[in-house]
Length: 193
Image 1 (cartoon, rainbow, N blue to C red):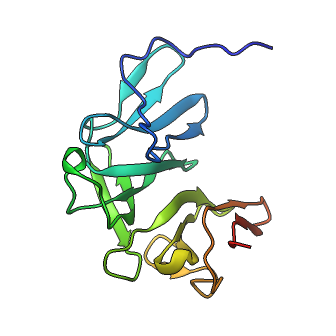
Image 2: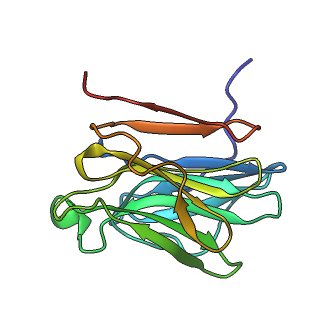
Image 3: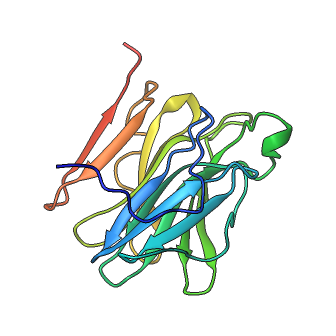
């Protein structure tokens, strides 16, 4: 088979070599895309309906963002996980204290649900990744201070650690995870050895 472009996007997915990773998720035949622009490292979400790309909410609804990932629930809930340094001006110099965040689309606006920091001043969270389990609970994985990985679960009300967080006492970056249909959690990470 051949790769087929989905429409003619009028937007830029920009990396610039700094971890501005896009996210993708499906809801039926609708494809959602989260991406970072070259304008203040702004985060945007778009939907492909089979014919056109449309913006979900405001373009660049947060600045100083990187590493986005998306989850769409069977009920149509749209959630984006990302890293953001709230004290950074991206075009003025390096951002140093990224926090792992989750925002949800309420039909009108993106609403921040939670923010996790790295657990140390001057340190950033990394490897932020949002997933859902078989029960449609949100799972947010990230590495914190010393690159120690954590996975948190949202049950509709509160966020709790899936395992003792961090579940590795040594550095583990990069860190990715997946959830099997039986809710078994699998992680892959570098341990520096």
